[in-house]
Length: 139
View (cartoon, rainbow, N blue to C red):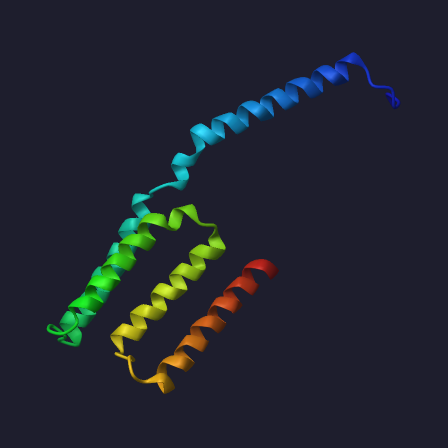
């Protein structure tokens, strides 16, 4: 055992350790944020979700007129979430994906004036989110 007395070697080791941590912080602050900015993979994933959503709306339900605002809202939401989701932690990513899925189902089923249908659907998505979060923290 070296005992409790600090030696010059200990101070030098601590100095270089702190210096390295400082360099890492500077590097991370100036160069490390690139990976947390825009990610093409996430953006293309949400654009693919939007194309699938639009295909179902136009192809299966044949909703052409009167739904342009809804399509534009989903396009902006898809592009926004796809652009910024990489900046969030996984918990917020899951919340964004659950919200996106809820809105897709809400618009696909046209639940605008049917609270007896969209309230249980919202509760279902909220419970699914809670179970997912619990699974992440427990498992």
